[in-house]
Length: 92
Image 1 (cartoon, rainbow, N blue to C red):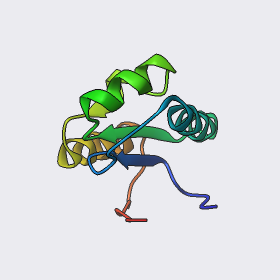
Image 2: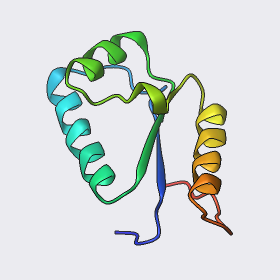
Image 3: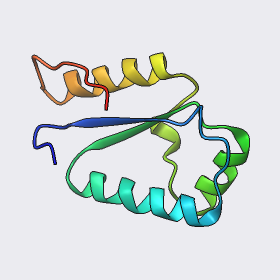
């Protein structure tokens, strides 16, 4: 667990399949992050994934981006808006 995380980007472009069970597990993880005050952005969601993720409420259209660079830009903007300074990008 990392205490100072403010934003997470889920890079979905390499996810090849997503069924309802996987979407529900992802939704649960996203909900837990949001309850901790962590903004969750997605990038590269494929059309087939989008349908499944939307059907279970796991996808937030406001924080969904076509590409990872766009998601990073939005995440940085979120950090600036919320007054976070001195941030760095970390890849897990």
